[in-house]
Image (spheres, rainbow, N blue to C red):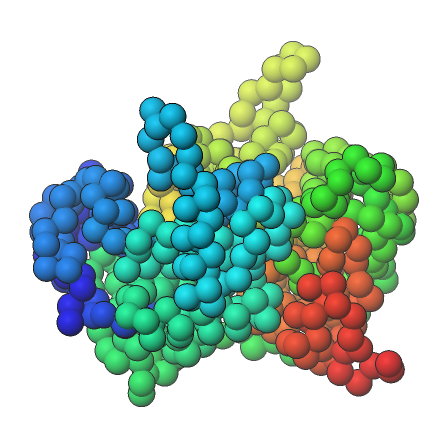
Length: 526
């Protein structure tokens, strides 16, 4: 039985044809994986389905009835629920309060909490999603929060569930629990649209795949008999080779070190989120140290300390044998390359043109501007644009000219711009020209990127390591951690565990360490 049918969906934004005559169907009890590169049209199509956008052409039927366009309430009423990659929960409210938000009229003089609690527990038991209704969201793990997001949709009567990158921030054990839950939901007749860049889990979870490329539906096929290589070919249009990394052969001296570093006084943040607690780590030239961990266990604090935007409250941070200053401009001048977690909010200034973003970290230096008066400089446009052209060519930044706003770039091309800005030394002869980086702080460098962009970014990090840089890779993707890390450490509760060779870890051991459970790594003494 067909529960969802999209016919001839088209949507244009100015000159960009985001969706071009797309027709898709979804059956009862089916998991359909929706794949595509960044900018392929997946988000636009789901936004049309959920009523956030109105299609220029085409129609949608849900359970045989036409779906009113551009009305999220209509989509919810028709039984469509969506769980976003970034959760939309209020940390200071209980599970029950979060589930109830938006389900009762503001003019209703009372709340049906007793009946709602009973229904929540019934739904939780039915779909194998145990939950404590009175628990505060802020006290829950990432996996438990995702469980609440799914329950919110099911509580509202969702029979079609859209999951956007559902395992992006889960431990392996939490991912396994999610897959078991999905199997149980499907067995009870729910239908699921599964959006993910992780091809192994796509092949494991889905019954059928649909692939978008450049706004068009280019392939549909049963999952059985389909390979990762075939999916990658459909997504990108050509074969994608994963980076081939050999172990680090020339590990040099310590470039940067943290000795018992804490970023907050005890008790300042009771939940322990986003801070370091007596963290110690050494980063050596010619080596990639990969940090695994569930998001919120101090990774942001670690990246910000090493990027110069947060001060250490206690402990010692050194770079090239000297105290590391909490001054980003000084760090960049000394050879620290920063690849931030949020490329949109922190990595670029979206309204500025591409060429200004390329030189933004050094725009106030003599390499790219000339001092006229105190606080007033004249931009050397020719030198700045030349550097931007070099980055555009060397790092294959596509989709916009030098004068186009950076926000017009796709996620992958925006990340290439940031990589080029950070890694490509200037050819100018001035003393403050960008040096080749000595330390690279790469925080979630491939988050949300498609398979082609992921392979490119990873290869650039390996090349930088082989050129002698010390690389700190912070990633929620265990495949990436194990593929790139020469040594791997796990963060939990603000602490950094002992870095061990990647070959000494199993996925199970990393997952347990991410959850705060200690177990020896492979080959380690008990």
